[in-house]
Length: 185
Image (cartoon, rainbow, N blue to C red):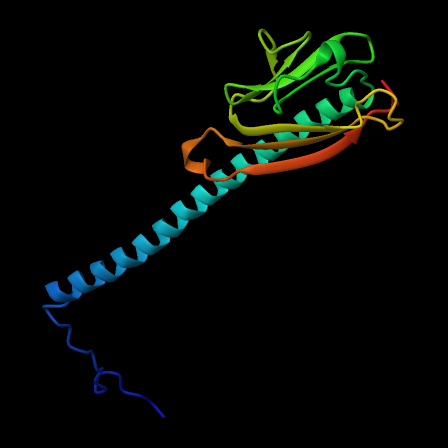
């Protein structure tokens, strides 16, 4: 069976001369796209802000944990904690004689914790990061009287937050208790 291609007609659909979108269709599509982009962008900005706040919070927590560890290490081998020549002037100051016989003072000064190799907080070294603001420091001392046959025990309370204004509403509160290994002094 032979086919005669000349006699067979091919159907070719008519191409419209005026194809495309109307102005209203374009405006609706742009409106929907704009709303979707606003939602996605807003979510992305919120995620960046949350990540920045979490990073600041972690940084403050790490810095305060390091400071508490440093103070507790020195108190553990200290003697004359807030007694005699090393009396403490306020609840946010602690003075003692360290294991090497040196006077040491820790205190809160200008939203930072200061360590002074000597009595008082006059010319000490700031041990907190410049990115951290300390709002509260307290030392609660018990058992530091002579002949009470108890080791001195110090509870340290610290509260601080980032100096960054975008994350300043977050505060880290840490507390620990340490006892001196030296009894009766």
